[in-house]
Image 1 (cartoon, helix red, strand yellow):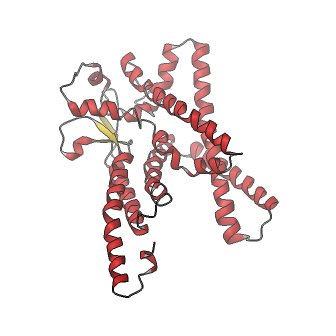
Image 2 (image 1 turned 30 degrees about the vertical axis):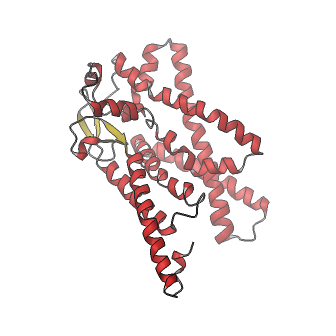
Image 3 (image 1 turned 60 degrees about the horizontal axis):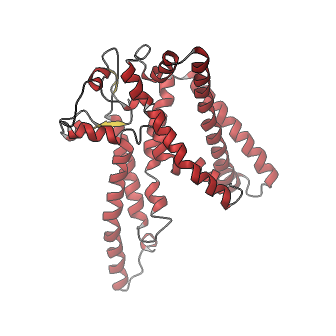
Length: 310
């Protein structure tokens, strides 16, 4: 949500700051890019890969790739609505920053127009849920049901199991929204965006090149996951009338304050990007070390362990 990504109070942003604080300026330049975690982590979500592999032909994928930058640009414009709400002096309802954009639309447009916009928000929430449920059903049917439960399952039975799994996933998501605090679902999305982004090196390096060592990729993945979780744990949720009241001490967003590094600034950076940097550093540093160890084993006449083989 746009409100989750702005770590300063409206009164602070409304004041001119010029170029006196380079860290604040860098934060303003960096924050809109990953303001919606879907933009940064979308390419590595399982349902995205499932949709790509299920495409009719190459031309279908090409057409969607051409339109994808426009979609990403629109997500960026949507994130800028948070800044528009700050400029308009819109205050959240009951301190809940997730109500900022709906309240901005309600106050800035006529009733019929804001109604359409709010309905679009509802539809936009259901579409990703449907796509993710299909991806989950495909993963369950092909990787669990057919492998471990019914290896001899016919295509017709696989289709029935996949439909059942998809419906079960939708009902489970509905129960989470109905029975749990809605903030729980938002928190899971924040955590999921940071964690799923850590699989990018394994895809980009592990599948496209044989240079990266498998255990270096695994070590980088673990380091990125731990770093991301620790950063998310350090992020409080701020709210209240002044924007500084700590509503929850941990897992309050995905914008990690640079003040944790000892920098005197109010800027913040998307935690998933910093965790990804740690992931890549561990992978790049550990790969030559593991390759040299495997080379020494081969040079001594011994057979390298299976984990050291390319």
